[in-house]
Image 1 (cartoon, one colour):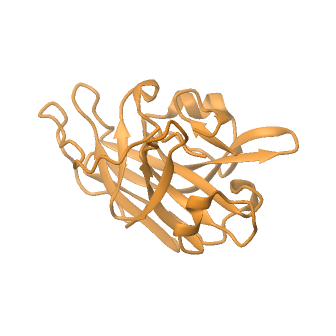
Image 2 (cartoon, rainbow, N blue to C red):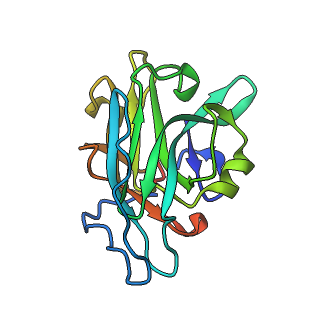
Length: 206
């Protein structure tokens, strides 16, 4: 099973995260705050902070998209599903419960991170070009994800802790040298980290 490494947006053998409960950093004085984003709509709505430290500020207005790992007969891919808006004050992201099968692993489970882009950037739903998305990303929910718990067999053991359908998870760092996992959290506690995606600690799940 595979995951997105947003540093390169190349799907590699499932991969970094942590159990740190320290609140996200406030905006530095060089990153003025903004108005709250427009509320997203959908069967699941995810909200939270946009965490950045000057001089790497979040865009004053941006868009957020769900970027899901996928695997098909022709290989690995990334799939866009779900969207919303963001400001320096936070983000609001929504999606319908009827998740496309291509955004899941055989309808057993799915993991989608929330990617932040500038307001002028649009990412159409469906399979998307990795290089195009990589160039556009300004930040990502590196320690958080939307998790889909489907009806089919084949999901990792940690997925059993999540309710059927869509919900939110926070990365739990492995302590035995293995892969990280996710644990359920409220969808109002997700954080999108802003900065050089090559430097972000992205949950190394499997």
